[in-house]
Image 1 (cartoon, rainbow, N blue to C red):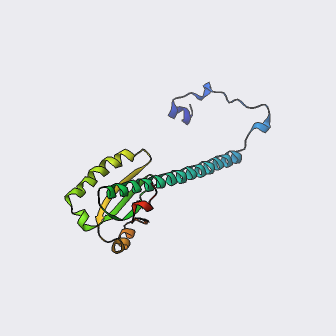
Image 2: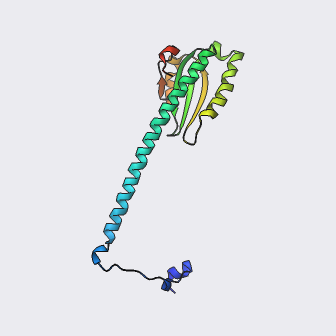
Image 3: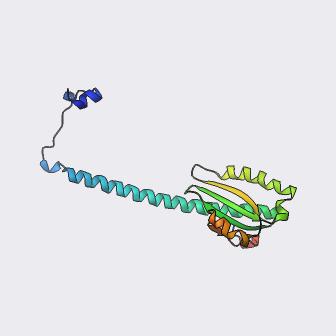
Length: 166
């Protein structure tokens, strides 16, 4: 009994290697290795294309939902000043919406958190997550700090709901 038979417990004497009659049907080891690497490269290329498409779809979906939230804020009579997007992964995004301090400290502002809790769950899928946060302040003063925290994309135009395409 050889080592392979010892490890697997399978008697190789029960197996017969069928050899093609035509020697041209044999593949040399180098050809098999080249085919393996070509298949691997093709698979990686396809995966990259799929990832890029998924990211593009998710990015557009994030944008649409940011607009929905900005419109919801305005509907509730709060003025969003800026929105910043952070890409955590192909599937995961975070948003910080900057509002006026006087809006942020109003008791009625808490209803936005209730809305967002349900909204985030509603739009979440196996391939998409979008989380929102609020921050009070002046966007120009916060730009550098938010950019250094990974919020590299600033949404604009933010000023008027009429300038946003839903």
